[in-house]
Amino acid sequence: MTGTWSRRRGRELVDAIHAAALEEVAEVGYGRLTMDGIAKRAETARTSLYRRWPSPAELLLDALAEAHPMERPAPGADDLRGDLIASLQLMVDWMLSPAGRAVQGIMSDPRRDPVLVRGLFERVFSAHGGTFTKTVLLHYARHGHFDEALVTPVVADIGEALVVKHAMDTGMPGPDVLAAIVEQAILPAIGLGPPRP
View 1: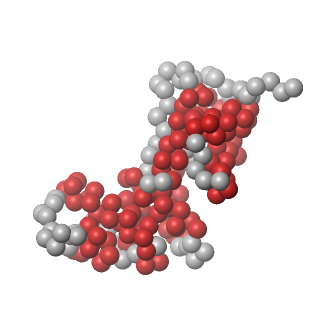
View 2: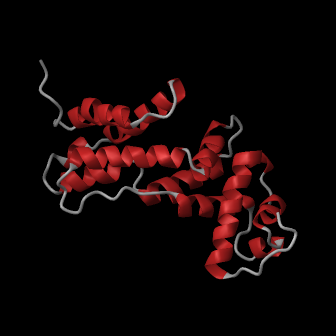
């Protein structure tokens, strides 16, 4: 902290507050997240926070929604494998970001706040397409590559679940593992995998 706060306004101030909220929750945990802590980290007055958000939870949800990425499949729907790998890489990059670490902290807290978790799913995840492969899968299904009915909740979760399992077991998966997840799990689930022996 510099000791002298700059006079930021508008988007610049909101971005600084969002970044501070994510850093603060990653460092102290959601249970100890306060407007005072966020304001100090953002180097702004606490009143600047209360003018926009009634509570740390609301501020955190806004910050997480703003920071959450969304897949961008090829407009021509001509590279399903590549777009699926890219969506899983996006997930890995997000997991390593302050926002991803904050979500991991919220979800792993044994006393997690059910209202906050519901807000996380409704305002962050669902608002950005759900899982990290669902947007890509639906895009290609709607372009006629396979039956959209095959994109069940289980199929939409396969890639994300395997990335999380790999991260827990051996660390964040690299490009070769992401490609294997796509080729050996996601594509076969929609009938586009290699032929069975």
